[in-house]
Length: 485
Image (cartoon, rainbow, N blue to C red; front, side, top):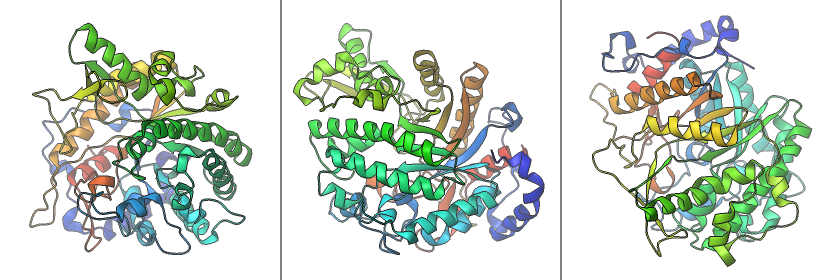
C-alpha cells in the first residue's frame, strides 16, 4: 500500500507548498486552540497501516455535467423536476471538482490522509449506459485523477456506483430491468481494465438500500419512484450486479481487493413490549439483514421473505450464489441508530422509526451516538465475521457560520469527529478488524434532495466563488493525522 509513513520523505516539500496555497488566515495553529473538552486521542493509538481518508462522490462534487461527452444521469433529470430538491438546485456545478480536482487532492494530502475514496460517474464513461466504445475523455479524466492521488501519496479507493445511473438506462426500466445488471458488468470491465494498474481497492456499490428504497419506494431520491415491488427488484438486481462484477475486477486487476459499502444502523426497540420487539426484528430484517445475509451466503431472511409475499423480487437460478461471491472487506457507512416501534399498516414491515427525547442531534436531526457505532460493529463481527471492516463514511452536518475573519469554528462537528474516532479506537481494542476510517466528507457538496442546505464537509465551499476554507474540524483532523495534538 501507499502510506503516509513510507512516503513522508518525498512529500515534505510538497506539503510545504500546499500550506502556502491555502489562505494563511484560514489555517490556525491547532496547538493554540482550546481542546480541553475533547477526549484524548492520538494517531499512534492506531496501527501504522491504518487507512485514514475522506470520502466523496461524483455527482455531489464534480459538476461539468455536460462536458466532454458525459451523458445525462438520473440525478440530472430528477433535479430538473421542480419540487424534488429543497433549494431548487442541482449538481450541475457543485464543487466544480471536474476542473479543481488538483486543488482538492492537494487539500486532502495537506490534511495528512493516506487514502482517498471517490466514485466514478457512469455517464462519463458511457453516455447511454453501454455501447461498443467508452468515452475516452471520461476515462482520461479519472486516469489523471488517479495519477494525481498517487503523486500525493493518496491510495485510491474507487466506488463504481454512487447512485448516478445513466438516464438512458432508467428509461429502459433502470435497475429493475435485468439488462442493467449486464450493463453494469460491462462498465465495470472497462473501468477496471483502464484503471486497474493503479487502483487496488474497489467498492462495487455505495448504499444499495438507498438506491432501492430512497429512489424507488420513498421517491425522495432519483429516479423518484414509489413502488415497493420495484424497489425490492432493484435491490436484488443491484446485489446480483455486485456479485457479477467481482470476478471481472479480479480478472482485470491482479491482487484487487473488493467489497461493497452498506448503510447500516444499530436498532433499539421503542419499548419492551412484544409488539415493539417483534417490530424491531422485522425492521432489522429489511434494513440490515436483507443485505448482510445474502452477501454472506445465507440467502434472503426467510422471515422477511414470508412477509413480502408477492412483493418479493424475482430471483433467477444461481443468483444467491452470485450475490455471495466472496469479498475482501465490508464497507460500513455509519451515521445514526434507529428506535423502532410497531406500527400496523405503516410501510412494508408495519414499523415506524421514532425519535427519542433528550438526545444530541445534528442539524439533520440525526442522533449523535458513537456508542451505536460500537454496538453495530460488534454485531457485525459476531454475526458475520468479515475479514476486514472499513468505515467508508462517517460524518455530520451542522449550521456552519462564517466569521468576519473567514473562519468556521464548527466545534460541534469537531466534537462529533473526535468522539467517533474515540469509538473507533475502542472497537479496534476489542479485536474487531476495523482497518480504516474515511470521513464524510472532504468538501461541502450537493447533498442530494437537500441541495446545498446541508453541509458535511471538513472544508467549507463558497458555491458562488468556489473558494475552499478549512473548517476547525478539518484543522483538527489534519493535526490529529500529522501527530500535532
